Image (cartoon, rainbow, N blue to C red; front, side, top):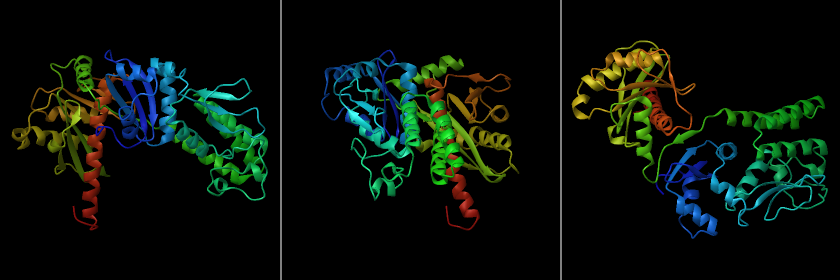
Length: 414
């Protein structure tokens, strides 16, 4: 399981036809995916899922919460076969929100009752406790299990570490508390706009009642939630079997390339107001980074913040200077940028190699000297492979630029 990172994300199980048959989330993709293969399946339905598994893809996210929200959206969109089937398995419990109580709790339960509570799921048994913990940290309702809630003179540890707003000591009204619970219900139902709107109304009400501590807490929750939902997850196109080749085939067909782009070289430029300008070139072969072929460049002939001129220079140096004999030519060249950057790169290219620019804002592809961009589906394996190469070039350029900047400021050696 070395190919999967030790960070949060969402993973996709696919069958031989490339259909998504299961979607899950993980605090650690590496550990979660490994768990499927390190122990026997605990139900016939899970064993059937593993029997039909042909490939795994994943999306890395910045936080556990982002993974949770993304999983909810994607399951709702794709309705994978085994997500539906496993919900009926007794080993896959529910999340229960006890809205019938004055001060609701969030619990894991194995059975769905007709008791007035809200039930969500079913969820994977191994991750449901983490999901509940994550939600309670974001929406600080009570962690105590007593029903009805017991009042206290002194709050518990969860209040002191700001994971609970202290209903047991009268720090939040019942209506304010229930509004938080309604936001949790919206979150688990996938209604993200309802969550943020409810929190904004609650924040305004708290501020109007001079409850500034609560208003500040709600403001922070809103900011975190909006930041998470604005962030585009980074899809890393690594596969356990032949999925990389499928992405390359899709690239060839979608972009009308003369041959399968087995070798892709991606370029990016990094500078601050034109100073300490550097560029990077990264290489992907068969859908995987080939780090020994990575190269970095100091931009010499460009003054000021001119990314197009810098790209022109670095492409010319790569394909006309000494590197042209040291490295094989790629099947596809990718530029981090839009029309100005890709046109500048094309002018410097002495070979008839397909070249495209990938602009970050809307993930549009630009071909040289063509006014209309190409828009690929955001979940297209072809686009995801290009984004992975583009993002790796950006990371490599930023790393080099920071080191060079540090040296120029006399803060250390490269």
